Length: 302
Ligand SMILES: Cc1cc2nc3c(=O)[nH]c(=O)nc-3n(C[C@H](O)[C@H](O)[C@H](O)COP(=O)(O)OP(=O)(O)OC[C@H]3O[C@@H](n4cnc5c(N)ncnc54)[C@H](O)[C@@H]3O)c2cc1C
Image (cartoon, rainbow, N blue to C red):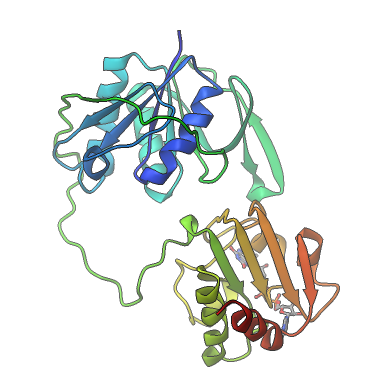
């Protein structure tokens, strides 16, 4: 019998991981560590193992990977799926190293048991990968699987000894810009060089607020103009987002930008140039001036 252990630092991802786990194992169990161990609700899993210990509250990578490897041994899991947010992508490889397991980077699909499908070459290509090891660790991109439903799994506390880890965090400083977790937003309103002045960004922020979303941008806005921080920069060299709705206003849609947003569920493009490459990837395309279109959306939704 094959047991899949699922783990996430974001509780919302557990149910998606359970669905993914059901595709590759006979039984799916979950590990809820640190804050998630308080009152875990994981529908569809057969059990949730909770654990507390040094470093788990802040999801320090080394202690979390150690704790997970102990839980894997305890429950006899041979596959581990980790929620592929930023922290999950740090924990996954370290856990794989501890378990001497094959590691799959940010899978989007599991087309058949044992095969993981993920983006390759900035999303231009899809790769099917088959681990050649008995044990497997894979990070799973958020929003790639339907959340499992059902009753919350029964909870069992498990003892782990994560230790302090090999790296100690000696200080934390607040960055000037308010941080934004764009990778987990349901709605992203992104803009590019079609916005002419820094002050005009307000139009985009207003639209994002009216849609209950967050603002993202193309690389020039962050890297060249420094209007926004790199936590909002989307693309090959920036963040990869998969929101339910992605609005791109005044973004041409070069391949490097598309690499960060092409898996969004619904893409809406606003551009004055009817030949802008982004239109080829749009579910809804609007040839128009963002200075007219965005305020109209904001007014309609406010
Ligand atoms: C190695 C490498 C990595 C890169 N990584 C990234 C990355 O991660 N992310 C990224 O974004 N880019 C990346 N780039 C840059 C990328 O190639 C493009 O140059 C960039 O995405 C273009 O940004 P843009 O669409 O904002 O600007 P532009 O290409 O200048 O497009 C602006 C668009 O706005 C439209 N427009 C103008 N005025 C209006 C208006 N009033 N209303 C509506 N539309 C209007 C124009 O028609 C045009 O289509 C990378 C490049 C390289 C070489």
